[in-house]
Length: 300
Image (tube, rainbow, N blue to C red; front, side, top):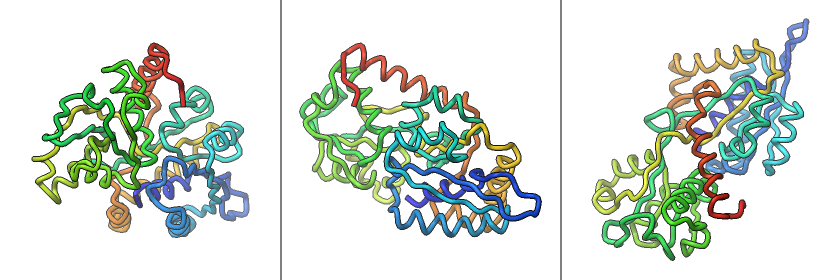
């Protein structure tokens, strides 16, 4: 989705080095992990970066190089080694490496694409399916977006809590789709038995087709703790550069031009957050890993 790309573009403002004495443009690097952020095609991502960096060059005198990664191990290692000033990744990779990343990070940013700051996840089934709870998903087909890692996390944890079994051995098949909407419609049209999607996707599709609400029911619902992407700024990045980033955020959310861009990319808002605000998702992930150890489920 384009809102993911816009978020990444905003983060270009923080991946810079200090200005030289002759006031030439600042230069820097941002790392971007494609795995887990494939809502938008690579070609579109490059175009969006080019458009936004042109705006930043005018407003903040910043030139930015973007490095794209396919491996979470590579990008995390390079970030920790301070090979670039900031990186944007799917939250699952942050959670898997949170101790090391927190030790080398000074700023955290997330985006809002739903009606709330954080997202809620649902597991939906058809009313006429006979499925009343997670315990009824045995040997069923469940759909979700291909790289919805937090959707998979939610499904795994709910099955572990209720059945004490590994989801890979409990359900019949995990059917992956390119979009959350496709996962939902596959369940609606009886191509899958259940789906895992963000609540805001369900709400949006219900507005377009109210019959969805009459035919689908929720058998599991998370708290509002998830986010589609997270960007972190290395602790060696100077404060004045983070200030430049925040100025760019203010311009986007307070000017007509900025609001038009947010609307175009279907994005609600960008939030700078304190690391303490990630407590909910961190505790959730910790509970998940403890359940895997308790029931001897192998890590993927």
